[in-house]
Image (cartoon, rainbow, N blue to C red):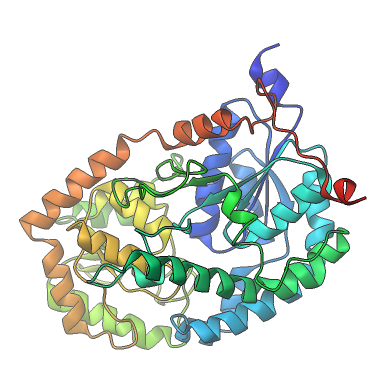
Length: 445
């Protein structure tokens, strides 16, 4: 029987929650698995249901709508780089959302042959895999594997290399911090409902998850794989979800044709508590730079009426980066993993204004690669600083470096590499030697 026929009987389920940058790469990975002959489901928040279904994939709901959360409380964006505040906010939010996770997760897992946990959904997928006896793998968009060489992402932006023991210690502190966020949801709700034993006070990151198989969806040309990572953690390249059916509107096409390539300015899924003031700073910076620009208002970091504002500015709500960025000369963005990947792939320089999370890390990586100036501080952003950064992106050395990096990333077979590792680990349903996991509850009886 052909592999695709055998594989299609046991679906692969990808659990992911977050913003566009968290979900779109998962859709790309799912499409790659589907093209290889596997039935794939994505369990995520309902605001991405249409995106998943249009991609030809099965959608299963998972309570965790980041968009609604950020739109309801825009002050979260102002605390984005305050670690203590983020721990408190997301611990509370995940505890509320987790009340529905077991019921929703069990529905998504019916008949499944592999569970893939991504980012904030990893511990839910892991618990379901234990309870149901289904193989499990982690997919990450940021590096989080224990390493003496690569410290945690919040400490990887410094100019000085962190000694190996300090790097390990910092990883352990980060793991404990992550567990402080997830503990009430996982130990308080998910694992008890599934009849699983609770994790100890220090959580699962030091042992259980450290031993799990991991595919990392970023490019080795942006961040090379640390040599002290175990074989369990492999870098595959970025997973790109292309929307080939999109084309610019007549008004946007006319704007693009009316002058030199503009810069893109957009902050995707980020929001701002004072979008009008932030937008004005951005507009003033563009005016000072003398460049043309396309502004994407996204989820609400900026505002403005769609369409051409004048000969220099065009405003839209959103557009797929894979189609728009090749028309741009540079991209001003927040440094999310997905937007960073899209700018790199397009071969254009970036100007990064981080909001929270891993964004300062990716800003630092692009700066080190010579394809972006140093990150700009959002709260103290001035029009002069933005104009200066935009001028830097037009320097010949940066343009050439960005083009070279783009060629290298475009040459990667990222989905194929992910499939190769999953097959090598015997994790894909219908493989020659399918991994077998005894239900955790059964082994405890």
